[in-house]
Image (tube, rainbow, N blue to C red):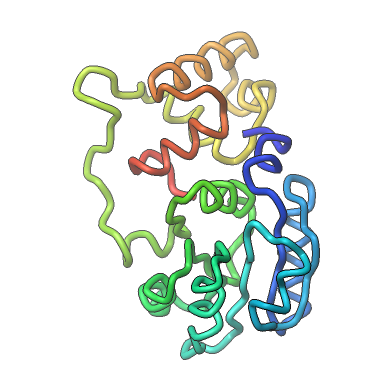
Length: 211
């Protein structure tokens, strides 16, 4: 998924939390692909209205017993919230509070741009480490009985989810750029998607990729 497509799908992002180090780290990882309007300390939902945020990344802090009330208040106010949590045990409670996604706060943030785009599209997004705890993995995910993705297409799809271009995919897999483009087009056709963003979002919905 290209940065421009991620930016368009995600809209405006605000990063909320009391740890400036985490806010700055998340902002740095998102800024190439996402419009980060502000990074602010923990604030009530009404204080965030001036930013017209489409998605809020909410850092719940280092405690494994973090209060989920701010997430619930933000979700009740109509905000799409992806929460950064300290431990796997918090995931179910935070999702129950209305979060659209959860991500371990100390994990690498390379998947966050695509995860936020998916959350903005109405999907529930989970850090890979959290997925096994919150929702069982499908044993053999596939599109349908007649059109599963090939092993190579799954490799390409995984790189698409990381925002790689056709050229980057070709270099990573040791194939020609034209071949990479062929695989991308095949994935779009199989998933009945009009673009790379939609393909990754649909793949996440059916368990082919984890965001």
